[in-house]
Image (tube, rainbow, N blue to C red; front, side):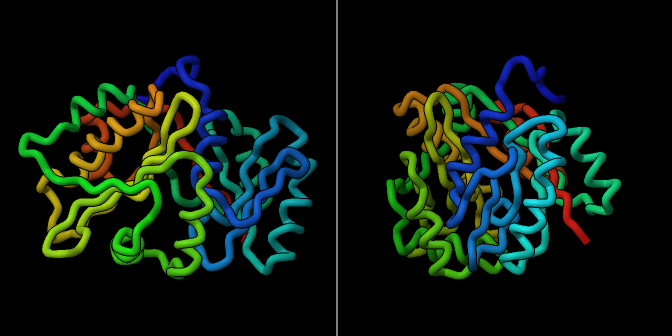
Length: 255
């Protein structure tokens, strides 16, 4: 169920998420945040995020198209929050922009997640404020997508806010990871991944538990995360520990 939009500032969450996952180049022009990160194929690193409202966004769309054409990239627009940009979405659809990658943004009280995600059998979870070599190796292995190792390392070192790089180790390697990035009053959960051979053993829950406690200690009363709409396994875990859908987003891709 989608939470009543009056209970949370969805646009602020998107702002925090953009800062928590910083693009190498990010500039605001004509109501848009234009983002580009060489070597990182993730769309959130190479897409335009609307930060204005109304007709001004359509007025600035030509600049968006010029920006990505100038970088030799396809034009990708992150329609976020989707519920607040229905007119923009309809206009992009009319221009032939294809819809892709429907995603849910979920939030939960940090204290509730810390309690609900507490593992029945304690697991050792490593925590580092900066990405270690082992954590970066695990990210490259567990997060498929073609991100170059050097680009990924630069991306994580660009994170400006306090961050917790979490992991669970088995046989000398990390088999589960997560990232929590703190912002004023909230914290974002990213990069949750578990080796398929080690799933259903409470690893993801243990990482959420430790990450939530870390966020609590930094004054973050709310956690947010993004999960693809079709990832039912992850959605069940997040619902079980207290996350509810706040809003959604998707991308529009120019042919």
